[in-house]
Structures are given as C-alpha cells and as structure tokens.
Image (cartoon, rainbow, N blue to C red; front, side, top):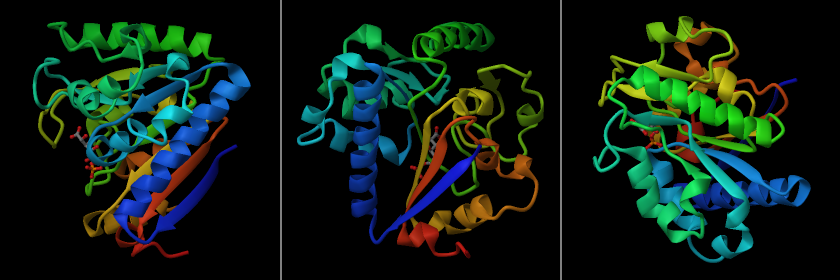
Length: 248
Ligand code: 6PG
C-alpha cells in the first residue's frame, strides 16, 4: 500500500517554506475531516527552519491549534532543561508561540531514571492517542542525517533487529551521534502515519538521499526504508543540493 512522492525545490529557503505550508495543509485537512490532528515532530533543522514558519503568520492563524496533539518521533535522553533536549528546543521555536495547551503536548518523559520505563510510559501514551485518533498519526515529520539515520534509528544499529513486533517505542543506547542515549518511535509507530514527511537539505545529504531512494541494498543500512506507512504516503521534500545524486 506504500505510496511515495518526491518533491525537489531549488533552494533550502523554498524547501522549508513549502514543507511548512504542506504540513499546515495536512493538519488542516485532518481537522476538517476528523475534528483533530495528531502530529509527530523531530529535531535538527526542522526546529530552526520549519517550526518558526508554523509559529508565525500566515500559517499559525490557519490552524485551530486547540485540536492538535503533539508527540515526538525521537528524543535525546536528557532532562527537559538540557540544551540538547528536542522538546525544549521545539518549545522555543514552535510550541511556546502557538496556542497549544500543555495537555496537548506529549514530551518523551526523560525524567525517569530508567529509560526503559520512559519507553513503556511513552508507548502507553501513544497507544491511547492512536486509539483516540482512529489508529493513525496524521503527520510524522522526519529529518535524515548524512549517515542515513532518521528519528533515532541509526544504520546497522543492533537495536533495529531487536525491536519486538508491535513495539511503538525503543530505547537506543550507544547511538553513534551524541548524546548516545535516546528514545525513538519505532518503524511500526511511524508506519501508522497518513503522511510521513522527510525534509532534507544540503549537499552533505546527497549520498544518503540517493541511497535511501534507491530500491536496493539492506534496509538495516537504510533505516528510512523501514518507513513504509500501512495506509499513508511518504513525501520526500528535498532541496536541489540534497537531491543532486538521485537517479530516476
Ligand atoms: C539528533 C538530531 C538529528 C537530526 C538529523 C537531521 O537528535 O541528533 O535531531 O537526528 O534530526 O541529523 O538533522 P538536520 O535536519 O539538521 O540535518
């Protein structure tokens, strides 16, 4: 049932503008059709370049934020007040600037001493949210690192082959990119999405983008290829530099 759409924009500025507009449209259509929206956020350059566009006119006024619930695709397992915390960064550029109530936002509970306990709790929260949202995340926003990782799913990391069937969250220890301890949604969780949106810019991503879009090789070396929504579409939104080595 997988569908894929690839969109290439000339410059990164245009990419982030079009991606923010697209995400706003997806949120609006979820609210129009089902009265509410469930979105999953990632960090990286989405935080600095895409979220400010959602948090400002004109897009901010186009969304009934009281109907939006927000989860995180992954989180660095550090306290909320740590500068590395994705939730903290997301508040600064996005959530503190839109009218979402605290009970609509579901940060990864990194205040548990045991990350496995946090994974269990976060899975329970996501399960309840999915039940309330007809089983689907409406929009999952993802980036991709130059090494090909997405969320905190790193190429050839042993955890990729150890995720129990049906698990929605996973603790990732020994991540190759610091900080080493993270919590991630699993491919199964992300594959509930109606729309998965990979937003990728820059020449340093060109090889990883080409490999991700080539339909060959070992999926464990290309975690983005584990993202195949059961009833949804994968959108790759790229700037020219990131798309440069794609052949098709
Ligand atoms: C992290 C980052 C990371 C980032 C990707 C893509 O948790 O270390 O959030 O996963 O999302 O590396 O980042 P860019 O979009 O900034 O290239």
